[in-house]
Image (cartoon, rainbow, N blue to C red):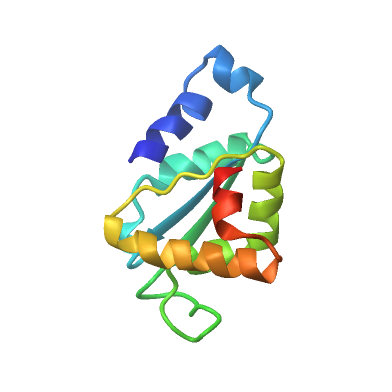
Length: 129
């Protein structure tokens, strides 16, 4: 729900921040299955109204496509699919936030390390910017 508040403030309320926003708000949302997609109707409205300012990708771990290794699709797998775009945005000053259970972070960190290695980047240095 933290990112929902950010999206609502940005796209759901008439305010100067939303009106002047020039970037891209990209939400990767991970849930077990489609019936657990929280706030999807709201997010779809924001997408329709702001197609150049918002992007939304779901990682459905119990249904939907498998990850590239044939396993369950988690957030780290979905982010890795778009690693070039994500890292390009980070290189241009974007910020990345992860919200959820702390148990998901080791998998996300491992994916980020792997992507850095493939790109010839030092993960620790990259984190510090």
